[in-house]
Image (cartoon, rainbow, N blue to C red; front, side, top):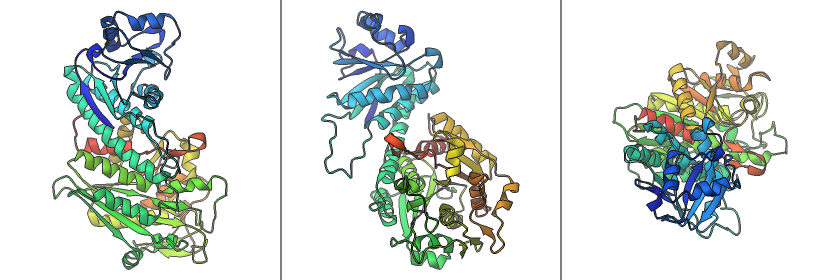
Length: 497
């Protein structure tokens, strides 16, 4: 999708469709009112008929408006003016863009009802771009017959004032890059486990680096991991015919001596639970257990598209977790790369087993900060649902930066405690630690486990079990937390907003 910004009177913009926001009680935002005045009050006359209440997400299409260069005007309801904010715009625009994408428009121009402030312009247009990207996303790679729109949307313009132009352009560029990254993450996660294997995921990382001088990819095989002593990670892959991979991406956009930010993403391309096998119901959704790894690839893709001036490392431990004669058994003890031993009380708590070795491996990059991302615990879904990712950290400044970034872009997280008192739940009579901590505080004890491998750097953990995908009729990957991570990195790189 291409995006651009225009200045000047909206009525003179030649476009297949002019998207115009309307508040309840027939109230028009400033730009919409200016347009309506210029075309003789046509919009007001339509609103007075009360066929359109302007509830959020409601739309009404007007053809061949008089004295207007646009072929169509699409009125979009924005709801209560007093409750209006960027996220409301996103939710209102998405169904409208879906409607346009199914028509023969091909392109459109949006009059965004933002306030006068520079930051408001940036935020509203970022949300508008997010709405467009979500609305036009399709996953039909595995269908025998693809039925895309005959003339899908390929270009979106925004009408802004001259003083708002720079902020609007930055918003378009950032939103487009985040859309690219989220789309990659969604595509990878939506693929079935028989296609998206650890080897496939590694090849997609290599493909991402092709043609980019500042992005290097290396993939460690099981023999190399064995030499490094990654007994915890390799114990998970023993039950699968698919060999494990450790995918390492190095993006060098900053100064040579600048410490990188490291992103470590869980890449379980399918998780049946191993010997502690999961219930059959909804087990197909366990193909999404690699969403953490997919979000690392998506975030690096976004940063590379923007040429962000910072250094990044992405580490994705990838495996399957299946039952087999050689698979982990409850009670087995394995030795991690750090030298710490782990008693495996439940083979379905495998994500932390592959992440702990990846975190130890990340030490070699001397990172300024490390963020791991994982669909780690069902307990996080119970606690936070699908609205917020769980956040735990050993550094309050890093945690605060992530929370602020999530709030700003609408991809929110919620911090949970990481108190020492929870660590005792991981006590084992036979090893340095157990891989589960009992029924209570499952999300917290999972993070406690990981914290034992992060003592040499500032670290935060994002549990995305509830946010990475949707179940039910809308089943599919969401692309989260690519927006949160990219927002965090944009701020760290001091990108103009």
